[in-house]
Image (cartoon, rainbow, N blue to C red; front, side, top):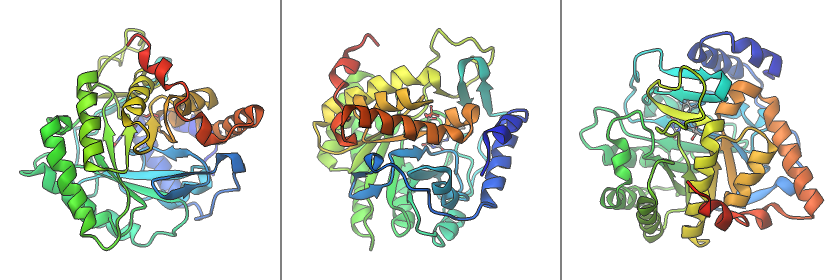
Length: 353
Ligand SMILES: Cc1cc2nc3c(=O)[nH]c(=O)nc-3n(C[C@H](O)[C@H](O)[C@H](O)COP(=O)(O)O)c2cc1C
């Protein structure tokens, strides 16, 4: 197990090198099932069962190299990717920055990944422990971006427990335009048609940016509901820069994640939850760095959670702390996880933005 001490040592390296070292270490771990979680944390969503609701967000295991090791770290699920049809190098280095004082990360990786074929080869040999989602995107130079998503659905339907259509990365120019209603309608129709014609039909989720305006969110949810997708993930990183940021790296271009993303992403989550009216579940992601933040995401409307940035600062001990805190809070209230989902959504949605 990569200890929190090792995590501290890795912080001495530049962030991309530290990340690569962590992936290399995780590849060496035995593929074990997680230790048993508190029964209060068990949950179901999209027709899948989860031992606990805490997932590893997309971007950590971009190339589907360490998904079998993540249950052993305590995660209830993992989302690999973003994967594009062809391998691509992404943007020049440096392209990821730790904002230590702000407990935040800025990245402008630009979908560096090994491409579909290489990831599929590894996913085909899955140990079938834990829940593994596959997040798909489009190549930067693609002539038909929607066709890239369709290819992702076709390629990974056989091996993914769920699929995520990622139209929300800020680091591929123009990608987020696919969130606009008419483009999104076409994208979801073609992606769902591809899923229907596959032999296995995993649930299909849409991951959105926190930077969409409320009128845009109205449209996105309307299109998503009409198309009958299975869920949404709220949210990706933000291109906004809260005034509270103190680090001198805050002006770096890219998507901001971690603690300063929490308020914005949680409000968008609550606003999405209210618009969904129970049609499908949501995954809440953005700035979860402890049990309080995790519980607040559930109350804002998330049935499942994901995190990434806080791992950089806290190490993997964070996962156990979150799970213990959530279980204790549910026990104290005598509540089931599902009953707290969305109960504060109206209040959080209405906070001044
Ligand atoms: C270094 C880095 C790389 C990321 N890469 C991806 C990606 O390839 N695809 C994606 O959908 N999200 C990606 N994300 C976004 C995360 O999945 C998540 O939505 C976001 O970081 C907010 O969660 P957090 O505050 O817990 O990090 C990335 C985030 C980081 C920090």
